[in-house]
Image (cartoon, rainbow, N blue to C red; front, side):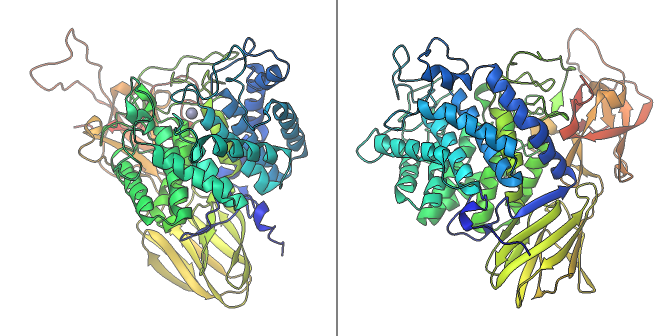
Length: 634
Ligand SMILES: [Zn+2]
C-alpha cells in the first residue's frame, strides 16, 4: 500500500475547508489508459512544449528579460495580459511535475522562475506592461489593464507549485504579489475591481492553502465591490465585466462568458469559506439557469462573438456559437466547485460534458494547434491558418498554432495536467467516483485509506469495473455517478444486480480487497432534441453517444453539409465503433431572392448511410463543412 502524501502536497487545485464533498488530489489519481490518458500524454509530450515554444517565439516570456535589461517599453511584445499566459503555462507545468515528477520540466520551470523573479518590485508588484518610464502608470486602466487578472494567474500557479512541491522561490513570488494586492486594495486602499475577474478565486485558494485570512477577506472585498458601477462605461456595457448587478443579486450568468464564470468560481469559493449560504445559493441558481437556457449541447458557453458573451435565454445559434475554449475550462472550474459544495451529480455531468466536447475539441491530434472558439456549425470549409505567426482568435475554421490573444492553449494545458483532481471525492461515508477513466484512485475515508482500481473503456464502452485494492476495516460507501443521460444503468455488486437511476449509485458495506462493483451504463448512439424555444434549432436533431456529441462533416457526407437532411426513423446505427445515420442529400436551391410564397421542397432521392464523428475530432482531416444539429427530413 502506498502512503497518501502530506495534505499540502496532494495537488488539489481546489481545497475547500468545508462542503458536501472533499476533493482528492491529482497525485491520488493515476489515469493509466483510454481517452484521458491519451489526452494527458498529448499534454505532456506536445501541448506544454508547444505553448512554451510559442511564448518564447512571440516574446511573451522575453518580456520579463526585457524588463530586467531595461528594454521596456520599446521591446515589449504581446497584449497587455500576456504575462498571464506565462503563469498559466507554469501552472500547467507545476501540476505536470506533481503528476509525473518530470525532471526536465522541473528544470524548465525553474528557468522561468529565475527570469521572472528579478522583475518583481520591492513592494511585490509584478507586471511587464505597466509602471516603467514610458509605460502607463500602474493601476491606471482597470477596465482593460488586466493587472489583477495577471496577479490571479500568478497566484494560482503559485498555489499549484505549493501543493505539488512545497514552498520555494516561485511560491514566495506569488505570496509577495498577493500581499501587494491586499496592501493596495484592502480596507482603506483603492476601492476598485479588475475588469477581468480571476483574482477572487485565486486569493480565496491562496487563503485556503496558507490559512491566511487576509487573502480570503480581500477576495470577498473584490467580490462585494463588483456590480456597483466602479468600472468606467465601455461599448459592451457594464454587464460585460459583471459590473451591472452585485453578484448576490444576479439571477443568471451574463456578459463576457469567461469573466462571468471565473467570477462565479470566486463567489463559490468565498461563499464556502466564509459560511455564506445565501451567496452560494445565488450563484448556484445563476449557474442552474445558465445551464438550462444559455448552454450549447457541447457544454459550450457564449453565444455572441460580440463581447465574447452569453446571449439571452435560448439564444443559441449554432453557426455563431462563440463557445470559447476558456469558457469551457471556466465552466469546469465552476461546476467542480458547486459539486464540492453541494454534492449534486448534475455538476459532475456538466464537468464531463464540457471536458469531452469543449476542452478536448480545442487541441489538434498532434497537440500543436487549437480552437479558440468552438462553433457547432461550419458553413464554409476552413482555410489553413498561418503556421509561423499568431492567428486572429475567432477565425473558427481550422485549429491554429497560436493566437494574438492566446488564453486558450495554456488553459487546456493546465486543465489536462490537473485532470485527476476531477475524478473522485470523499465524504464522511466513503468514496465517490465522478469521472470514469481506467486507473487507480486512493483516498482517505473514515477509518483509514481506500484504494480502488478502475477498469473501463469508457466512453467507448459503458462498463465501469471498480475493484477494491485496499480498504480499512469497517463499512464505507462506494458511490458511482450515473450520468443524467443514462436511464437504464445497472449496478452489480456482491452477486446482486439492480437498476440505478441517474445520480449516484451507492454500495455501503464492509469491503475486502478484491471486491468488485460493476456499473453498466447503456452506451449507444441516441437522438437528442432541442428545447422548443431555441429558435435556431427548430426542426433539427443531434446525435450523442454517452457523453460525446457527434457531428456531420462534409468529408464523410461527400457533399456540403448544407444539403443534408436527416432521416429519423429508428435509432442511429451504432456498431460500437462507428455511428452512422441515414442522410438525404437534396438539391441545392438557388434564386435571386431567398424567400418565397410556398415552402421550398427541393428534389432529393439520394439517401446515404453516413458516418458521424465525435465533435471533439472534427476538422482533423483538413477543411470541411460541419454541423452538430441537422435538419430533419420531412
Ligand atoms: Zn481563451
